[in-house]
Amino acid sequence: QTINTMPTVDISTPMLFDVNLWVLHKEAYPIIDEAYKELKNNKGSTLVINGNADSTGLEAKNRPLSLNRANAVKHVLVKRGINPSRITTIGHGSQEPVATNRTYEGKQENRNAVMTISPAKNVTILLGKD
Image 1 (tube, rainbow, N blue to C red):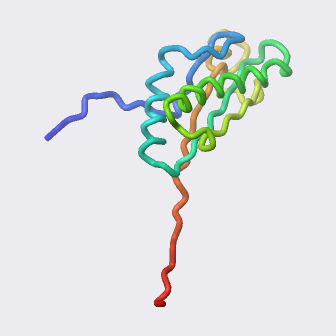
Image 2 (cartoon, rainbow, N blue to C red):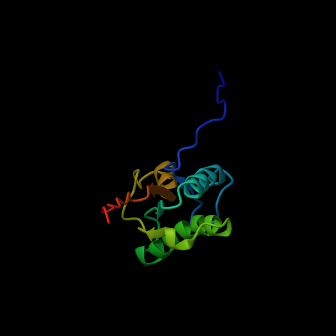
């Protein structure tokens, strides 16, 4: 019996960012690697990357910042060969916090990008008796 000792990486794990930046941390790459494997192995699946920001600053800056965070993740996947038409990026600004924006820790959690993979839609083909 073979036991897999590699830790499982959940692609829905938030990838965190520094204030006002969209540079990926090294901790993001194992998460992106898992998404890449899923997309490579399931050709019809699609990916949505939601970028978020904390409430620091104006929303007019937070929305494009959050989109840049999502696009930073997309860029890595496209560079590895994933068709960009399979990836949707959304920047939510500070409108969808996962934690309080009243503490340093909460703000840190809110500066993220999160991926969700949707499986390929099943297509049923009915064959006639012709």
